[in-house]
Image 1 (cartoon, one colour):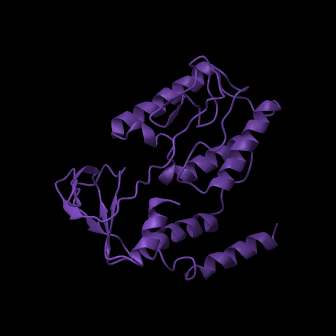
Image 2 (cartoon, helix red, strand yellow):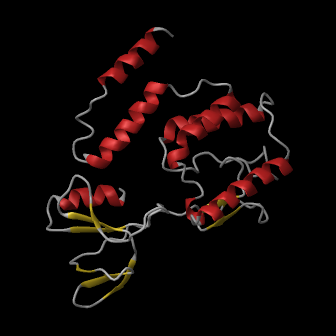
Image 3 (tube, rainbow, N blue to C red):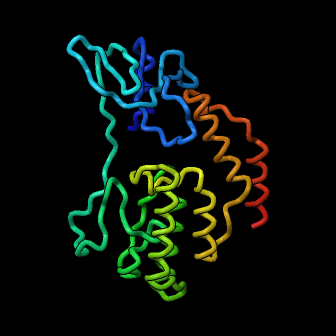
Length: 237
């Protein structure tokens, strides 16, 4: 379970919930806590915990102080490949697996080595299926990769953009707002169709409702027109 899932369940039985967030929003000008949409007892803190005292007081890096009975560490996970020996060609640095061309191929070990499922903050199964199709196409010689030098140049350009944006390495594989661009890029490589417009709108609508109405967004929706578009597409296959 994620911190979001755990905090949602806790909020129903406790007085207050406070979530410390490592925000990737570089445009945010304040680290001041804000109420979580959809709740009146859950607060989002955009700075990490600096220290905890014996009396239960918790001090955040921005100086905010709260009193807590329990602290739950939602540490996530780290990429770890103890079974893989590449003589240092592929490494993990602050959750950045690299270098990987398009999050999949190590330029100097491609196509014999590839990774599926590294990216996050995207709908996993359709994306990982496309990744697998691309790999299969490359291994069967139906799809040609760029040269190792060209792939490495693309990776270095991608890393450079991250450094300029100020984002830490651990977000290298966070697709997020680029998910449609990434999906369509893979689709072109695999000669598959682009993601349908109604599917994109349905995804974005669900994400928005999930943020604003976290308890009910699975049961209440306002996109029946998108369902009709989906049925229309399926009936004309």
